[in-house]
Length: 216
Ligand code: B1M
Image (cartoon, rainbow, N blue to C red; front, side, top):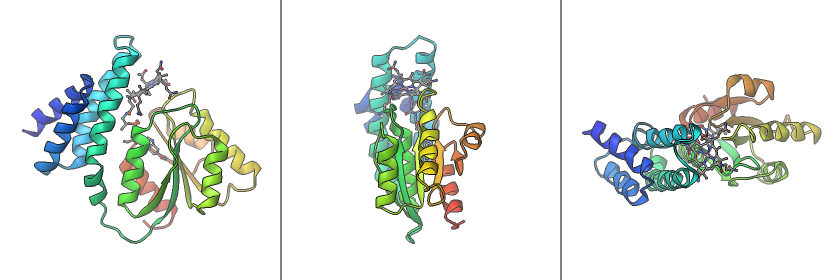
């Protein structure tokens, strides 16, 4: 049953069919499928497939856009269920979250934000295409514990380093922990730019954030 539904979920993203992806997300809620399973075993499989096809020149931008929309709609439908997963009500800390300047990929970043909120963090998601001064300004404004930056493009991941360099320049590096993530981000990269941690997925980001604020 689940295997069949995961396949349908992936296919709805490949087809760029937002109505279908939302319908399947609603069905997943009804049958009490774990929302993260619906995302990682179902919808993400489809978006990765389209991403690979696009990379090989076998799918084109409109298909990528439609797959992105269908993915976004499915994740938004599951969002309230994801939020219910968090058991902790103690405030863990404040996180400023953004996708870096020049980059408009938002699905993974938003998912990370939802999971952090569900785990008790106060999340200030300042959206996509966020320049360094906006990220740092928000972190100062809300007295953040953590700055989280997502980058999905090899051309924009360098912006993560720019934010860290800017923090250094302004004498603020010690004030905030910095975590990075996104498809091209590796351990080697986070160590190179001297971030405080990186994670390959949303669950790992929560674990890391808790460690960094001394709550795990
Ligand atoms: Co674009 N795109 N895209 N895209 N897109 C990729 C990233 C790409 C790998 C596809 C490919 O060619 N195979 C490729 C990048 C190649 C490269 O840099 N080497 C690419 C490209 C080239 C582009 C454009 C340049 C295409 C063009 O215009 N010619 C363009 C760039 C626009 C821009 O940003 N300036 C572009 C545009 C788009 C859309 C707008 C159409 C759409 C995004 C829609 C949206 O977000 N609203 C889109 C999509 C959907 C993708 C793929 C297919 C899927 C991304 C996604 O949402 N994944 C992607 C291929 C791929 O990654 N397989 C691709 C699902 C999401 C849940 O996973 O975002 O990885 P992800 O997040 C994960 C982890 O990475 C991690 O946790 C998340 C949850 O598990 N994580 C963090 C993420 N952020 C984190 C932060 C953390 C910790 C963990 O701490 C702070």
